[in-house]
Amino acid sequence: MDENEKFLDKLQSGDQQAFRILVEKYQPMIQAIGIQMFERSEDNEDFIQEVFIKIYHALPNFRRKSSLSTWIYRVALNHALNLNRKNKWKKWLMNGLNLIGSNEQAVPQMPGQIEENAEQREMRRLLNKAIQRLPENQRIAFVMTRIDGLSYAEVAEVMGISEAAVDSLTQRARQNLRKHLSTYYKSL
Amino acid sequence: MKITCPSFKYWYPRLKSGKLAANDEQLAINHLSTCEKCRKAANAIEALIEDKIQPESDVFFSARLFARLEKSKPSHSVFIFRPVFAYTLLLSLSLFLGIRLGTYFYYQSSIPSENISISEEYAIHSTISGLDVFFQDDFNE
Image 1 (cartoon, rainbow over the protein chains, first blue to last red):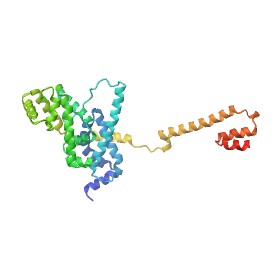
Image 2 (image 1 turned 120 degrees about the vertical axis):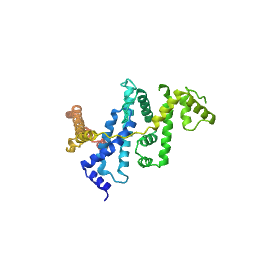
Image 3 (image 1 turned 120 degrees about the horizontal axis):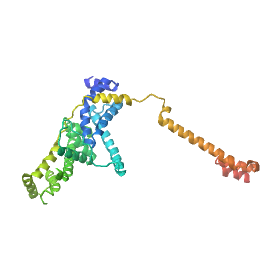
C-alpha cells in the first residue's frame, strides 16, 4: 500500500491530524478559487470554511475513482457555483427592496497584493464583476487556469473535458473579458 | 471601422481575437503605438487577464476551521425531538384534533336528536362516513 492510500485511509477513518494536513495543503488553492468567484471579500472566508466542512463530512463516502485533489476542486467549484446562484437571488431581492444603497462592493484582495492603488483596485473590481458574467464553463476554466501551479491537465480532469477544450474555453473567456473591460477603459 | 480613442471598446477586443480586417489591424497597431491613453488601457486589461494568482497559505485558517467544525458536529438527539420533526408532529396533531373537535361540535349543535326519526339519523351517520347514497336508497325502498 503506497503513502497516498495510507493517507486516504487515515482521512476516511476520521484522523484529525490527517485532515489538518489536507486543510493546510489545499487551503491556498481553495482561497484562490474563492477570490475570483465572489464579488464580496467577506463571502470568501465563509466559502473556504464551508468547503472544508463539506469535505470533512463527505470524506467517508469518497470512492477513490478520481484523485483526491480533483475531488476537492470539484467540491469547491460546485459549492462556489451554488453560492453564486444563491447570491444572485439575494442581490436581486435586496435590489428590489432597495436595501443596497450603492453598487460599490468590497473587492477581494489578491494575496500578496494588498498595497495596490485605487486604479488597480477599480480594475480588479471590474474584472471580478466581469468574471461573474461569464458562462459557467468559461468561468471555471478561466478561474482554474489563472491559479499558479495548476496545470491544464489538472483543470481538464476537474472539468471532465480535454485539455484542448479547456484552452478553447479560456480563450473565449479572455475575449469576453476584454470586451467587458474595454467598455470601461475611459475610467482608467 | 474607425480606429479612434472613443471606439476603443469596439476595435480592441477584435484586434486581440484577430477579427479585424488587415488594413484596420494595421491602423489599430499604429494607433496603439502613438496613443498613450489607449496603450495604457490595453496594457492594464492584458495585465489583469494574464495575471496569475499565487495561492498563499493562511497560518491561522485551520484553527478557525477546527473551531467551526467543533460547533457544526451533529448532536445525537433522538430524531423526534429535533425541531423539524417536533414541529411537524405538533402541527399534524393539532390539525387532527381541530378537525375531530370541529366535526363533533358541528354535528352536536346541528342535530335536534329528539325530533329525528331513526331513518334520518341513520342517513346522517352514513353521510358522515361517506356512504350516504347507498344507505339512503336502502331506507327509501
